[in-house]
Length: 371
Image 1 (cartoon, rainbow, N blue to C red):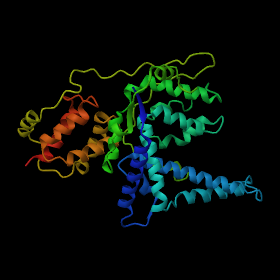
Image 2: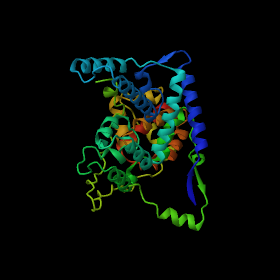
Image 3: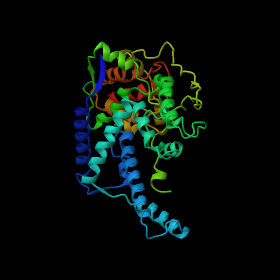
Image 4: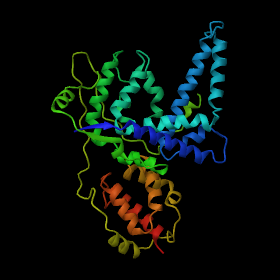
């Protein structure tokens, strides 16, 4: 069996997602601004891919201006005036629905690709870079990569790759093999799309039978050898741990791989939570001024709690925390909330169920559903 992408499902899902997002936003607005786009959906990656595309269009406008044969754009005064003009222009993003919807559709499709096939996605990104300027391209676009960014950002500022794009492509594939176990779960990333429309991974990745000959051939395949945009806000509250580093490729020499990331093997990792036991335990405790029913969890966290939960429970991904809080808010009772936490987060994220962070998180959940 081999896995094949259902391109029709991807096309239909991206179109419907974009339509729903735009219907919601433009119900009482005519335009959207750059700052609005950054918070347009619950998926940070989708939002930043829209911004990335606007950045590319902004650059294209500048290229068009400079292509005129009648004016000297190398003149210092012209250069300074043009830079100021383009920066002012970038701060006046104003997009109508008819123009935004295709941008959102493309952004959703790209986000799904980077979640499910980070090697393929980032190799395509490398291929877009001008000849000999891969590092510059990655530096310029790093702020837009929010999912599986460790697959590619380790390349930035690395020397020794020279102008050989094939070396970069091979390095991406090799680095992925080293760090893949430390990357966030595909299901958890795609779950952040669910606030608008649930994504069905089983419909997107389809098992297809292959002949013995085809399977043999496939096994032989190897990895292919200050403007607004400068100040785009980093919305992730906590940065992920730095990626393991692969030393630069030297011609005729193999890649030197970084040591694999060790997973947490503590005995309490992934142990299922018992709602009855937790309820009995929390019911006897006093909260030192924290008594009383709380409203939506997403609005009740203190800043230090938000940082702690993001870092210690949700792999540094603020999107996942927001999605988890919203899902728990929709539960009917404490038992249902714990069941949801067990099924979606405890095992997937290898929670240490006896840790202080888990205990404090569950206390908040209990308080939400307590009478």
